[in-house]
Structure formats: C-alpha cells, structure tokens
Image 1 (cartoon, rainbow, N blue to C red):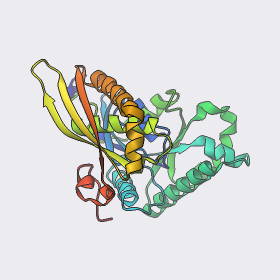
Image 2 (tube, rainbow, N blue to C red):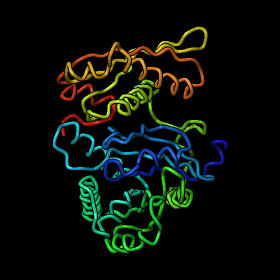
Image 3 (cartoon, helix red, strand yellow):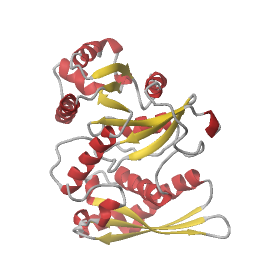
Length: 315
C-alpha cells in the first residue's frame, strides 16, 4: 500500500497488567515482531511503537510496560511511561487476561491471578479518575468455552469505562481483526505518520539489544528480568553486506554473570546463536553477533540507562 492511500492515521496505546499479552497483541496487530515476548512479567520496559495498516488507516500501536504497584526506580519509570502512552493516544485498549477473571468468578484464583486482578482494577480506577474511555479486549479466550466469560463481560461492562468489548486470543489471532477495525475507526483524518514499509519506531541498535534480552530471559528462568540489561555497543556495516554487532550484557552480581555464561560458556553461546538467527531473519542478511558480560551493581541507578529508552529517571 502506498503512502498516498492513507486517509487516517493516529496512535493506539495498549495498557494493562503485566503478562496480559500486550506485546503478543502488538506483534499480531502489526504483523511483524516489534516487541519482545516471554513468559516473564514486566518484559516490556519502555513504550514500543509498531506500525499497523488497517485498510486506508495507519495505526501506530504503542505497546506499554505493564501497570503495577511500583516500588523501585525502574518500576516507577515503567509505570509512568505506560500512562504517558495512554494520555497521548487517540485510542486506548485495556487488555485483560480473561482467564484470571473467569477463575475469580468461579472461585479458584492463583496468587499470580490475584495480582493480575488487582492491577486490572487499578487501571479501571485510573481510567475513571482521568475520565478516559477505552476499548476492552478480553485476552486468552481460547483457553475456555465462551459462555464462561459472559459473567465477566457483564461485570466489566458495568464499570462504565469501556465503549466496546472484544473477546480475543492475541496468541492465536481470534477476534483480532474485529478489534483492529474498531481501533482504526477511532483514528483521526491525516496523512501517514510513517513510511508504508516501516513496522517499528525503534532504532535497530535498540531492537537488536531487545532480541538478545528476550533470549536471555527465555533461558534464565530463575532470575527476574530486572537484574540484567543489554546494550548494543557497536554496529558495523561490512562490505560484503553483513553486519557485525557487539553487545554487552550487564548484570548486577557475580553469580548472575556465571549464570549467563553457563558451564564452559555454553549458555551465552546458545543465547548468542538464537539471537543471531532471529536478527539474521529480521535484517535479511548475515549477522555476526558478539556478546560480552559485565557486572555493574548500580546499573538501575544510572540516568543514561533510562534516557535511551525514553524513560524518566526522576520519577
């Protein structure tokens, strides 16, 4: 589709509790991988913008960090970024893990589900306080018969903050087209905000670092994602068309370095292989990836580690 055929363009923020599936939904709407997806909560640290095309409408999808009770500096910066993304958007989608609400209605919630419910209720209250309307997307409806979610839909509809409610599976794609059409209908008239072939508003150096961070988090199940970060130190375009990327994995403790390296360096070698395969596919050319590990106990307290991601340090 050419840029000239775009008649409407705008921003849609996807907000919700950690692990509701926001990054999965963003990637599904965009049709390409722009946000990292793992089983861990609070994976997304900063607003990621993906560009979706729905007919003649260009929608910039803002995948926001999960909204939760923030204690540490990094937590506070992430939550502020999430609400900032919602404040600036033409449409807001509140994504809720339907399975947690169904479990509560049927009287058998887990501890993780109770946390998710508390976060959802906090979002609902903040939408009310701001006088903000949203689209509700009930996610993970592929996990149970639809009739079990009907009481949940009624209860959430009664909150008075949702214009429309959609049942979706971000993972399988069920119901996502109807949700995309509803989002597109809320975009204002205007020209395209991004070129037609662009799917993400992220520097490739940052996206490459996020790919490696995803592979680390998928393999290191024991540790929270906060305890490491990845920076792309150098990006060298080579004459043969390939690219040489050097990245540093920053961890907080000596024990974490040993975990990342693995026995005889096996862990970091496999992480590097997986990241290289994905980056090669993403860039469409050979990638030479070199990973190093550095210990910095105070990386979460350094201002420069926030500004590059558009996060506020003084929150």
